Each structure stands twice: as C-alpha cells, then as structure tokens.
Length: 288
Ligand code: NAP
Image 1: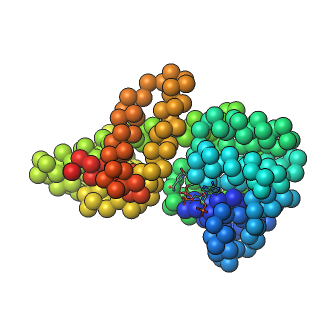
Image 2: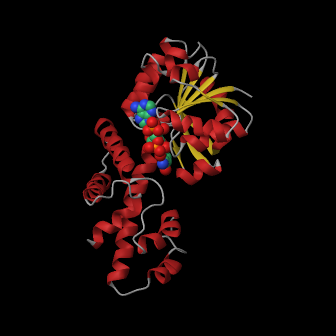
C-alpha cells in the first residue's frame, strides 16, 4: 500500500480518492474549497491538508483531477503547489482532461525536479468514478506507468499506457471526437422520429439492435425524449474538451469538420442557458 495525495475533490475526484482509501492506501486529500476536503475526511479514512504542497509532502504518488490547463498548471507549480512538496522519485498522476501541450510542459518541469509524471485522463463519467469503473488512458515512461498502474487500479476498469507523455490526453481527444458526432447523429435521429410521428421508444427498441446502436442510444434516449439533461458530463466541460481537440488537430493536420460544427452547436446550447446541461442536450437545440 502506498502513501497517496489526491488534489481536487470535484464530481470525479471525491469518489476516486474514496476508492484509494477503501483499497487501503494512506490518503491525504486537498481541495481549493476546504469544506469539501473536510467532508471527504469525515467520510473516509484519510486526512485533509491545508495546501497542495502539504498534501504532497511525503507522498509516493500525487493524483490530481481539477478543471483545465491553467488550473492544473497552478496546482502543480504555485509556491503552495504540489511540485514544491514532492520528494524526488515521487510520481504525479494527472486525471484532469487537459491539452497534450500543458502535459508535456509540466512533465518536463517535473523531470527537472526528479519527479515522474503520468497523464491519465479518464472516461466513464460520474457513475464510473463512483463505481470505480473508469477507463484510464495514460502517457509517460514505461517505468513511471508501471509504478502508478497498481494505484490507479483502485478506480479503473481498464488502464493502459498509450505512449509517451501526452499520449493519454491524445487518446481522450479521440474519445471526445467520437462522442461529439455520435450525440449529434442520435439527436437528429430522435428529432426526426418525433417529426415523423413515430414513438421514440419503439424506434429505439428496433434500431438499437442493429448497426445504429450505441451506449448513448441505450442510456440517453429516454431522458432526451423527456428533455431532461441532468445526467452527467456538462456542455461547458465538453466545449473545453472540443477546444483542446480542435487545437491539437490544427497542429497535427487532422481534419475534424463534424467536431468543429458540433462544437458550435454546443455553443448554441450554452447560449440557451444550457452550459451545465449534459451533452445529450444537443437535441434541445433542434427542438427550438
Ligand atoms: P468539478 O466537479 O467541477 O470539480 C473540479 C475540481 O477542480 C474541484 O475540486 C475544484 O475545486 C478544482 N479546481 C478547479 N480549478 C482549480 C484551481 N485553479 N485550483 C485548485 N483547484 C481547482 O469537475 P469534475 O466533473 O470533477 O471534472 C474534473 C476534470 O475531469 C475535468 O477536467 C473534466 O473535464 C474531467 N472529466 C469529467 C468527467 C465528468 O463526467 N464529470 C468525466 C471525465 C473527465 P473547488 O471545489 O474549490 O471548486
């Protein structure tokens, strides 16, 4: 069992840190809003630290799950940030969805200090974090990954090293690119069914058995029909992720016309007041 710090106890981080404690690791948590860390320590075996630096002191592994590139940079490099407290040989494991560029920048900084850095974004949403069933896609050195993997296992259904630093984030971008077009296609299909006077549940019962079937169709068609959009990953987060994908595509030359279009559709949803709605709310824009 390892000494582990966990930084960022949001929707994802709070239950992930809980799984580490339940697995028997010695866990110290930190959250910018201290009340959440106190609440975590009241519920789990482990302690709350006053700063990221304090949480990281003496830890063999420092896991983080915060918001975006700037948040991660701050949590790592601020005077009271994690890198200042970490001892040489310790490994920073980043579960935030960020750009491959900031990942490589922070990984290089970590290396100068004798620290390991594994980018390890996740998919599986709030339910996956709560059930300990996340898909974890990693980038880094084989040595750093081999040490971190048994710790990540506390909340992973699958965990894999995809390549050098940044490769985990690039894999997460593939995930988001695949979802964007799929949710728009599903929205258009259900919207068309409504306009054609068909029953959505009957249509889905039939077409989900064939090539059009998807996790989104199975799990979201009913709530989409009911115009209920409080079931997970928020539009504001999705726009952050699609922005990262489009910037990376600008660099590597990939052509992402549908992703770019769907990103604008999500902007429309934000303008409708749906920034905190879940990503299946693309259908609300069609019904407008
Ligand atoms: P969240 O509930 O909004 O939590 C964000 C966490 O980051 C909070 O603990 C927040 O602290 C902390 N934070 C933000 N900015 C910070 C800063 N500058 N300094 C220190 N702490 C900061 O978000 P979440 O849903 O857990 O998502 C976290 C990350 O996982 C995001 O990158 C997201 O894209 C990714 N992700 C989310 C899901 C999902 O379904 N939710 C799925 C896959 C990946 P405070 O409490 O003080 O605000």
